[in-house]
Image 1 (cartoon, helix red, strand yellow):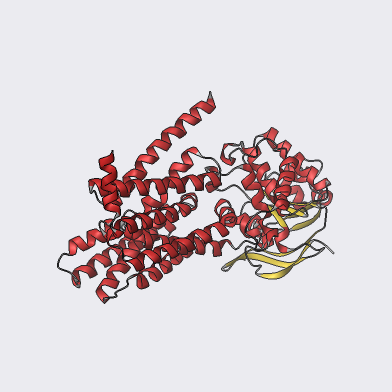
Image 2 (cartoon, helix red, strand yellow):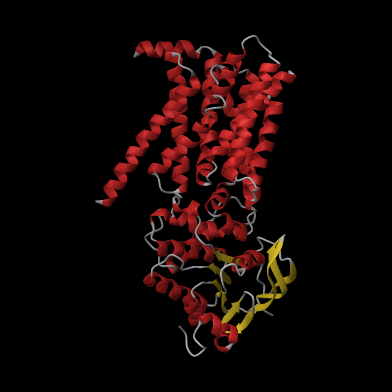
Length: 285
Length: 236
């Protein structure tokens, strides 16, 4: 045990390890906050689609040679989020189909661009890093850390301030509209916040695995808890716990960070599922 | 001055008119039933009254101090709600949001109003239960309590009894009647023509022909006799 602690102590002397942990926890916090709303509104896949858009945008940024790719990736992702939600409402192409179109389209274009205009000699490693976030969490600059802190703060504040209205819009859009809450405006707000979260989360788990961060904690919490507040709080706790555990585990055993966190989330889901099943059986007796 | 009066109202969506030349008034204390065949425009009329879609022409005038967002709406249930993790109290209090302006959190007044309406709908003891675990009738009462949090003046019910068994249906109608007797105006959209004739004092029939007037006049009108299929003698 003391050997393990020594190992942690050694690792935590490096600033990049501390950065990774701080940013990891913040991302886990933000992504799980909106997960409940997304799952309930049947938007789970939008996270996935948007993350592919972010991948495409990142490829473009790399090709153009932007030093700070966030400047391009963030607005493009937000715009796509807004477009996806807009088309979802009065759709010629149904919501899920347009998400699928945009997501694979962005993926293809991104990879194509990276191959046509290679910026480094090892393209497949680059692609792999963007898709699975293998090392980017450990190579964060101080600026990126502060940016993540600021954006997470914004996400959390928005969520808390609008919590009651987000609940109303998620539960019943028609009723919310009839009482004068502009449901569409809140949908757009939710979309924009998701886009921000996704761009942040790309650093942690890479663009292919982001939806896992968003939906698993929410689904786990929904197995056990039965009111909105408890589900939200519980999913935040699960998400932070899994992210911390995943990062620490991957440091010791040197597994890739992103997939380790996701596996932790999956394990947690299994545990909560079992607890939920036991609870409902007990209630029936 | 009526609470809601519609003049030469045409409703529908951009491309096509669903119903036109609607003229009617809803007065305080009315029990107003909207009947008609499927596709006659009942749902479109609701959306127009709620301000979710704009009327194509004509006008809707709100009177007697009724503001547009003071209609308590009881919508039909959506798929999303069936597995939604929310407690009864959370759902009911969300009806209070309309009167809160830009305040982000609920205060004492909202909590009190939610408690009162939970009591009124006979839901005491269920506050912490999950909405998705309730029976259909209980769920409707929760949504009704939420509508009452939004307003005491006028409630708009969209097929309130669809999917409920006869006993629960009767209970719900009783509850609505009580609210109406207490001074709340009720607008009800219904397939259940029997109940509409029994409880409502005003009927709006929309479709190829339009009727608006007292329930007793509806029963002897030609259109009413055709629709109720009874020659106009008695209900049923």
